[in-house]
Image 1 (cartoon, rainbow, N blue to C red):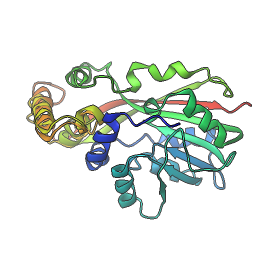
Image 2: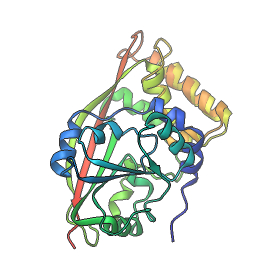
Image 3: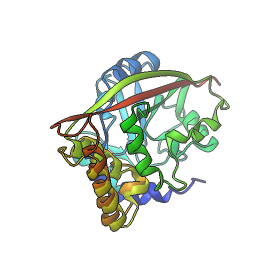
Length: 294
């Protein structure tokens, strides 16, 4: 039996797929070497991109030369994926019910996705499709809240999260150690999302699932608060990224816009951001790998 999608994902990602595609950062070039070395990806190896979304991780996977199977449960995300990667197929499926044969893939990768389905049932299904010795990779782009202004931005959106699963709360770790898998090995890479502030900050926060699921007035209110933080900035890197967060993308349009304005206001008040045509949102890319051992 599969677990129903969390409402923030079902609503926020379905109606906010385009915002997600625009607002989310890419992954650092170093992740390609990690995929090759830690997961063994190479030509003639078969890898599942589980929770593929709009395909943000696809360029990194394509660079390995591996045979890719993309799986995504949200129709709006699959449609955006198909528009961005018309040469690739994307399958309708969940972490607990993948449309794949037993022991049919060399690796499964969950890029900014595993926190949505961190259950024993999902791990059992992943183990089912992996070949002996196959590897599971978990990757997240995490805002670097060690930077003061990034921490203030994060504070703006936390109140909207509710019970939405998030990488930051570390609840996903509770399923490890897991039956049939070895220990998790961790790597970390520095990364920056560069571009106009509306995309990097406002767009990113509004793409958050629980914000995308909010009513329009709430999203607009948050967007306005963000913009107030960055009023002097162009709006691509910061605004766009925050608006892409699942729980923000699920908000009604007015709520998303209000948050965007608050983000802009915060940016306008930050010496490191105000008045700059382009900004860089610092990220920490967290990567974990475990191997099927039985």
